[in-house]
Structures are given as C-alpha cells and as structure tokens.
Image (tube, rainbow, N blue to C red; front, side, top):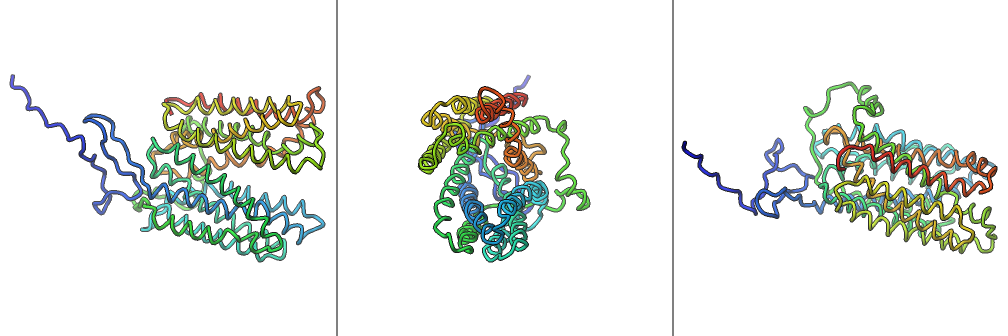
Length: 454
C-alpha cells in the first residue's frame, strides 16, 4: 500500500496562531503565546507586562486611598461630629463600608461580565468605580454631619465595589496560569505596603479632616488613569451576552447552586473557614497582652509596635514564598492545608505562651501563614472558576463574601467563645486562639475535596 507523505514539522520558533477577534486582530488583554522549546511541547504563554503593571499599580493606589479614612479619619471624624455616641456611629460607618461592599460585589461583577462597551469589559467599571470613590472620599473630607458621612460612605462603597469587581477579573482574564501565583503574590505585597503607607501618612494629617479622608485621592486618580490607559482589555460583543431582563441579571448575580460547580464551592468554603481562623487570631492581640499576660499600659505601646513589625515582616515573607512556590507545584491544595496547619501551630504557641517573647513567636507564625495563604488560595480560586471566562468578575466577586463575611461576624462571635473559654482552666483568650486554629485546619482539610490537580 502506498504510504502517506510525511508532513513537515512546524518550526520550533514559529508562533502559535491565536483566535482572531471580529476585526481580524489578536484580542487585546490576552497574553501572547510562543513556543520556546522543541516541536510538540506545550506552548508557553508570555506574560503581558502591561496587564501586570496595570493590576499592581491600581491595587496600590486604591488601597492607599481606601485605607486612609479607615485607619485614621473615620474614628476622629466621629469623635468630632458625634462625641456622645462615637462608638455606635463608628460601628455603623464600618458596617456600611464592609457590608455594603460585600453585598454589592456580586452584582458589580455580573455587570462587568456583561459590559459591551467599545472601551472593553473591565475599563468602564474601573473608571466609573474610581470616579465614584474619588467623589465619596472628597465628600467624606468635607462632611460635617452624620447623614453626610453615611451618604459619602455609601457612594464610596458603590465605587469600591465597581472598581474591585472589574479589577479582580483582570488576573484570570489576562495572566496565564503559570504566572498567576507571582502576580497575586506581588498584588498582596503591594496591598500590605499600601496599608503600611496609609498607617504612616494618615496620622501626619491629624487636625485636617479633608486630607485625612481624601489625601490618597491624587494617587488613586494617577494610578487608575495609567492603569486604564495601558491595559489591553477584552471586548465583548452583544451576541455573547445572555439575553435576559435586568432583573434576571441581578438575581443571577447572587443565586448560585453549589452542586453546579462543586470545586468552586469547596474552595469558597475553605477560604471562608481559614479566614474565620485568621479573624479569631489577629483581632485580639492587644487584649491577649493586657488581659492574659498582664502587660501594663506603660509597656503596651512599644510591644504593639514590635508585634506590628513582626507581623508585617512575617506576612511579607509568607507572601513572597507562597507566590513563587504556588507557580511551581502541580496542585495548590496541599499548600492551602500547609498554611492552615502553620496558622494552627502559631495559634497553639500563642495560646500556651507564658511570656511576651513566645507570644511574638506565635504571632509571627500566624502572620507567616496568612501571607503564605494569600497567593496560594488566590491562584486556587482562579483555577476553579466555573463557566469558562464568561463570568470571571461575578465569581471572583462571590469570593469577596467568603473573605469579608468571617472578618465581619468573627469579632461578633468572639465574646461568646471568650465567655466559654473563661469557664475552663485555659482561660478565654487561649481558647479563642485554639478555636481559630481548629477552624483554619477544617478549612485546609475541606479543600482536599476539590477534584483534580488545581
């Protein structure tokens, strides 16, 4: 029988063709692909430098601007405007920003996934969200009454929800899988650095309400203008958007059947539980020092500063290590369990610490575990997003609930755990730390239910 003629092998340096958009051009925002190795090997996707820069600078600018009022301005504004019930007013203000962003996140994500603007899917949400955030921060800086403060925070919450929903989808949209750990890790590090900058710069403006609240606005504007300008966004045609009423789009943003995407559901539950453990072990360090280790008021400021520095360094080291390790392993599930076990180990050290030095050791371990968890879990989340790439922003926004809800209700549940712990020989605060460690371990074990190497 005649043998078929052999086909010529592709050149190792030949680029792998991309799908073309409606204009016959390569879709913007998608990393280019090249073959670096011999013929037949899996193509290696090149990372878009524009996308990385846009993601990182916008995260930094937005975090600095949002953290300035949260750390410094709001408590002092409430003390000036409502001195007789400042605690209640501050609690209400904190609830608006926390629960407002959490409730709006899925809706804003769904809207971002359905944006058919010629400017792209994510750019409009980023631009409008940044503009509303600027308006909210400026209004907060000028507010002289509780209604004005609360109204400005509502505007800020809407702006942050829009900006963050579009921003969170940029990594799964435009960063290839082999580099996501490093991008998520560097983004986490810049978030920590931004919080540190806000904590240092904010107190310098005490006495000037406008600068305390809106001091980060110029940086926010600059970073978002640069980011939106350089980011090569995806463009969505009207035919790719599900044809359904606005009410249906809103309902679909919040309704999710866990059985339809079990891997996504298990990762969501894992983050929820591990974050619960973090909330229990990171919110009551000062009270542990004063009420359990009997640290006096004279020594407390220096010990708080030392613990903050150790925690920052621990989180930074954990984030750096986690961001590089997660890009070099076949499965991130063991890494999530490792971070949960490390957090539990730090919780045990703190719970049984008889002295301040051992408390510092345990606190540093908790910070190290938290930093390691951020990029590891972040990449795992992106790996299990359902629906291809059609609902990235919506599903990424659902994880905002898994992150923010335990941080909101954890401190509310802590008094009950402290009361129960006070009935034991260990005492309230050791039991609280142990409860946080156990909760984190459960979260690390739950993620093992995810199928496949993700």
